[in-house]
Amino acid sequence: MSGRRGARRGMLLALAFVAAPASAADATKGKAVYDVRCTACHGPTGGGDGPAAAAIDPRPRNFRDAEFWKSHTPEQLREVVKHGKPGTLMAPFEGVLSDAEIDDVVRYLGTFRPAAQ
Image (cartoon, rainbow, N blue to C red):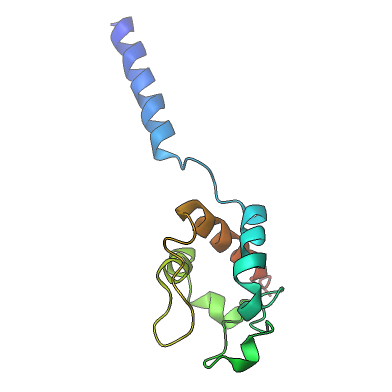
């Protein structure tokens, strides 16, 4: 019985490891990607006011807008970064960024979210 119990415990630990993300999204790595890929439109502080923003219609997303965060989840942001947003100049980054880089960028975008008031 103890051999069976040990094998079962080993299997549960293995399953727990597989179920956990290989690596958590890293906002620091996301900032590095954001600085290169996103600041031209969204601005260095996420205000939608990058150097190219004035020429873009509709304007790039302002990630500092508290109203935006009331209706957007990290999963939705990931989809937009990955697949782009029709009707805007938000291009898809699938094939340009890895899934891990997309996750990192989404994690970094969360740092622009205003604190609850």
